[in-house]
Image (cartoon, rainbow, N blue to C red):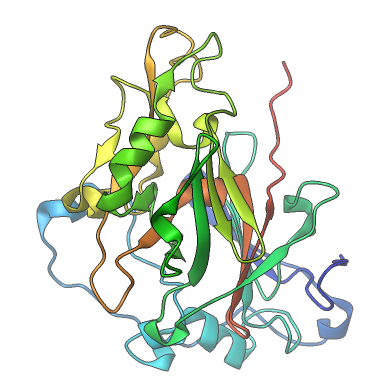
Length: 313
């Protein structure tokens, strides 16, 4: 496999999630055929006692942290750093600390994470990855600068002071926004459903980064009112972590409610210092629509519209 827009960034080692079973797929690149890969020695934190709230609601056995090195208790606890150092996956110096995240949207495909590069086949034909610089990497978060926020065609002044940030988080199932802008976004993005339910493109939420604009329409971030709660307060944030089931609804649910209201699924979060009070959390809605590539070497994050398998009627 070859990638046209980033030299040396091709396939690495992939982990597929098919239902509840996780498998690995090791791809032999020509320069690595005589090397052994796939084993990794690193350290873990073991929990011997946990509270019922929120852990009884989780269906997983542990948390695989993918933050930057400074967010780990020590370097040996960081998966990307440890894996790159010990040769646990294929890749050259330019892509050893790179991983691509693809989140499935239907049963016709599988979610996948690729270490040591990314998979071009997860990118919509004709598109290339747009890279954005990570700021304040010493805090450990994959944090990007946000230049502006536009809702339903109206550019909001919220980010005019240049302090808006966005943390891209694979463990958050919703879109997190500060309270100061949250309710205005709800008012502008809330709308009556059409014959297609909430599966439309407008009104849209546009988040302008330095080199790319994320565009999320009703089909990406709204659900018919009366289903899943539209507004999530911070004390519900933990229950949303890595819980994609909260976003799953029957395919015809919105169509059956032609008179329903489409509510944006936003989680109100005011993050503490040292993070900016104007920090957004970009979770599952962004990662499903866009194939996202994290590069800890730069550090930087790349986005391109994801290629999803659509069912044939």
